[in-house]
Length: 186
Ligand code: HEC
Image 1 (cartoon, rainbow, N blue to C red):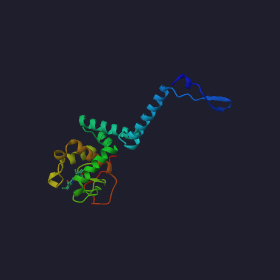
Image 2: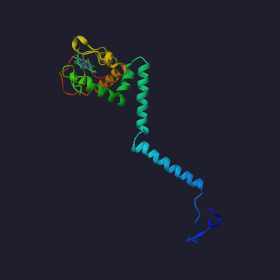
Image 3: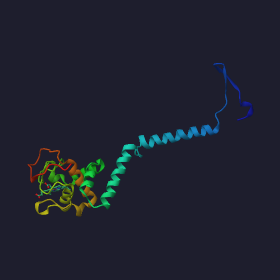
Image 4: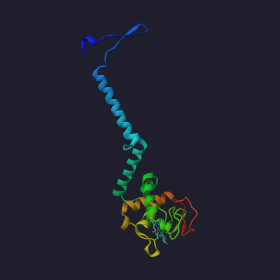
């Protein structure tokens, strides 16, 4: 910008104040455009493409991750399985597997067909979270319930148990009650 062009009045006054027609300083423009570009990138990342996780979703993802790590390293406990049964992403993963692997005998809803109704208060092999996990892992082979740990592995079996626990006590009408009335663990 040449000196001559500086401090030329625009011929526009407001409240008796004369305006100059000077360009904005470069450093100011640099910061301004940087924030515009950053803001645009931020908006696309979090709100348009949704490649970034916002608050609640990031928290849920971290929690699911922590549970997975705890499940892989600590011995399984009723409390840990109950926490997994309350974690939406673990339950959703379990539900997906349940529909694929278990629905043929227990129905998609879990209300029972060849296998028992898993949503009622009656249980053949116990309803403590660790007992449910054990039934799914080892099966009751002589009665037609396969063992799932050998084919699916520990992590998937745990998410299946979490799903079954999350549906316990929803009492969907289905197969007649089998086993002992135990109530729900939740
Ligand atoms: C081929 C049929 C079949 C498939 C597939 C099957 N189950 Fe079963 N399931 C059974 C039968 C039959 C029983 C009852 C066993 C008995 O009478 O002791 C049972 C029992 C159970 C029980 C114990 C219920 C109780 O009252 O204690 C759970 C939990 C269970 N199944 C979960 C699952 C899950 C999870 C899957 C999928 C990974 C699955 N089952 C797949 C047939 C099946």
